[in-house]
Length: 417
Image (cartoon, rainbow, N blue to C red; front, side, top):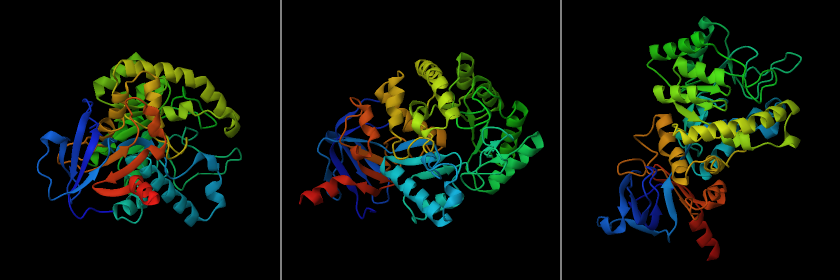
């Protein structure tokens, strides 16, 4: 629902995403063109006689959350052959439903790191479907037999989504793969510098793309105006290669150590730990090889990411949704807190830092005058119970650039009436 007049949200506690103390008895005014016109204490608010007023009755107002690592084009629970066994129209509509559910869980911006094509981003921008504003990697770049190479044992290709990955094995090939990804309309490039847990034939400690190949990809992007590079990097060697090669973010980072953290700080790169996949271990629903790797790496991850939190690494929220359940993205906040992050710092990781990682911090990520009115309203107190945000039922209002995308408060009032 697009606003016809300014909307003034009153009687609300505001956590603005900057890490500053909450604003009690707050007021936030959204202009009819979808930006924040005022945010602050009620006693300091300008005259609002021309605005519609909404009393939020002591609820908490936060910036819209940002998930820096999702895979909205698939759900692991469906299995690897789901796309091959169903009509393409059904597959696309399932993706659209996941995208909508993610928005209603409080995620107003997201970075999809493989499996979603340009058309979904354009559909959201044109208002054909509802979803987070998206940054797309489209097709990650991997070595043959690397983390992104999905072949069944007999050798047939079994991609879970079309063009899920670009396979490249030399410096010249990675340059060509980078150009193909750019041709697909990608906003960033994702690369695999290590093996992984979900890939059958490698391990997190295995080396993926080499340093000269990573540098070639970064150089190729620089030649085309510059775009971010996100590295799937789980083991130590892959993490160091990614950072030395000039990536923007380390995805997962389970084996990161002090050398890696030093490089992360030196290069100004982001760490996106995706703890939701580490904490989600279900033997009954996982292949034996996958389960064994998860068990081995879960405690390693908790120790290393806990150390990264203690060292104040620049951490942005990311879940790997698709590998773990969709529309439960804010579970990640609770996992960060369990490993030593304060609730306020976790909220910043999911808002301001995420916006910085996506390159949209001048528009969203904090509640400040002049920024887009991306916000969520919750009946929970996230500073006392951060885990409550994991349940979308506690996300009562979602607004995106001033457009109300979800309003459970009005729905509840309507039902009561």
